[in-house]
Amino acid sequence: MPNLTNAEKAQLYNDMLLRYTRLQEEIRRIKADNFELKAEDQKKVNLLESQMKKIFNDTQRLYN
Image (cartoon, rainbow, N blue to C red):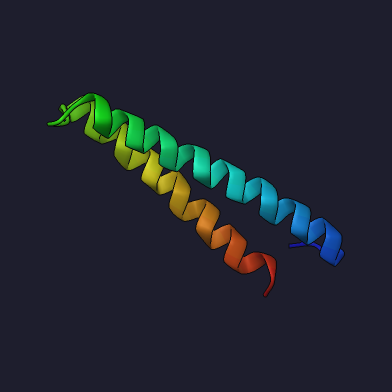
Protein backbone atom coordinates (compact mmCIF):
# COMPACT_ATOMS: atom_id res chain seq x y z
CA MET A 1 0.00 0.00 0.00
CA PRO A 2 1.26 3.48 -0.75
CA ASN A 3 1.86 5.83 2.14
CA LEU A 4 -1.62 6.78 3.25
CA THR A 5 -2.83 8.91 6.12
CA ASN A 6 -4.76 7.23 8.90
CA ALA A 7 -7.92 8.96 7.63
CA GLU A 8 -7.37 7.51 4.15
CA LYS A 9 -6.71 4.08 5.62
CA ALA A 10 -9.88 4.34 7.69
CA GLN A 11 -11.91 5.25 4.60
CA LEU A 12 -10.43 2.33 2.63
CA TYR A 13 -11.13 0.00 5.56
CA ASN A 14 -14.75 1.16 5.74
CA ASP A 15 -15.16 0.64 1.99
CA MET A 16 -13.69 -2.86 2.23
CA LEU A 17 -15.90 -3.70 5.19
CA LEU A 18 -18.99 -2.59 3.27
CA ARG A 19 -18.01 -4.74 0.25
CA TYR A 20 -17.30 -7.70 2.56
CA THR A 21 -20.71 -7.33 4.22
CA ARG A 22 -22.47 -7.15 0.85
CA LEU A 23 -20.74 -10.35 -0.24
CA GLN A 24 -21.79 -12.06 2.99
CA GLU A 25 -25.37 -10.97 2.38
CA GLU A 26 -25.29 -12.28 -1.19
CA ILE A 27 -24.06 -15.67 0.06
CA ARG A 28 -26.77 -15.70 2.72
CA ARG A 29 -29.42 -14.92 0.08
CA ILE A 30 -28.21 -17.68 -2.24
CA LYS A 31 -28.25 -20.21 0.59
CA ALA A 32 -31.66 -19.05 1.81
CA ASP A 33 -33.19 -19.41 -1.67
CA ASN A 34 -31.97 -22.98 -2.08
CA PHE A 35 -31.86 -25.48 0.74
CA GLU A 36 -29.56 -27.65 -1.36
CA LEU A 37 -27.25 -25.66 -3.58
CA LYS A 38 -27.00 -26.56 -7.24
CA ALA A 39 -23.53 -26.78 -8.76
CA GLU A 40 -24.00 -23.34 -10.34
CA ASP A 41 -24.99 -21.79 -7.00
CA GLN A 42 -22.09 -23.48 -5.20
CA LYS A 43 -19.71 -22.12 -7.82
CA LYS A 44 -21.05 -18.61 -7.23
CA VAL A 45 -20.76 -19.02 -3.45
CA ASN A 46 -17.16 -20.19 -3.86
CA LEU A 47 -16.38 -17.15 -6.02
CA LEU A 48 -17.96 -14.79 -3.50
CA GLU A 49 -16.04 -16.44 -0.65
CA SER A 50 -12.84 -16.03 -2.64
CA GLN A 51 -13.58 -12.32 -3.04
CA MET A 52 -14.25 -12.07 0.70
CA LYS A 53 -10.90 -13.69 1.45
CA LYS A 54 -9.12 -11.20 -0.83
CA ILE A 55 -10.82 -8.28 0.92
CA PHE A 56 -9.86 -9.73 4.31
CA ASN A 57 -6.23 -10.07 3.23
CA ASP A 58 -6.26 -6.53 1.86
CA THR A 59 -7.50 -5.18 5.19
CA GLN A 60 -4.68 -7.00 6.96
CA ARG A 61 -2.09 -5.39 4.68
CA LEU A 62 -3.65 -1.95 5.09
CA TYR A 63 -2.14 -1.44 8.54
CA ASN A 64 1.10 -3.40 8.08
